Length: 272
Image (cartoon, rainbow, N blue to C red; front, side, top):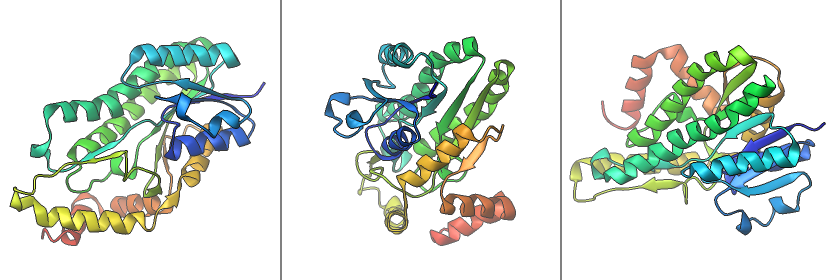
């Protein structure tokens, strides 16, 4: 029997590329998104179930999980991919924006995982793949909210891996670097207050760096292939840097140590 994967945030970017890639490998795919009625490509693929799931709506989460199990009999892999990035000076964000960032990237991930865990526990089998980021282990200026959520995903994943190992389930973390998705568009929530002059020089440098990164980004399919590796390699490996730039940056931080790495980063932004 073909294996089945459930993916959140499948309407675009990494989620959509992953749904397509796994379908090409013969997997059953539960491709979830907030508005499946607007999807025009995934609904043409064999063995793909399009269904509504909003990570901010627990009822929709449970319904999507139930629909997937009813259609395919079993879920073998969960990919927690849905999310977005809030960037900007912390003091310009309203509290509701802060809550939305953590609800989407952290609480939503926990709610989806909780909905699938009883199924995995009953089967004594399953893999949870959480999409973090190179930004889950290093940071850029003005990303306190986004990086805070991705650092949380790293800690949640590592801790969860111990408890679910008691019934044969594995947890994996996939960490993309610069990826050619719509992150800089609808998934990038940038706020600024130009009247606060102290931040503007650093914001200009950050925007230039992000522009340079987007010009050297990797296709979402590269990340999808890494997710497939995590789902199929049969190992207990926890972390999977997903793009060459992520590998290089994380190796650099490990080699140099926190203080030297952060000091070098500050120099790049003219802070020391």
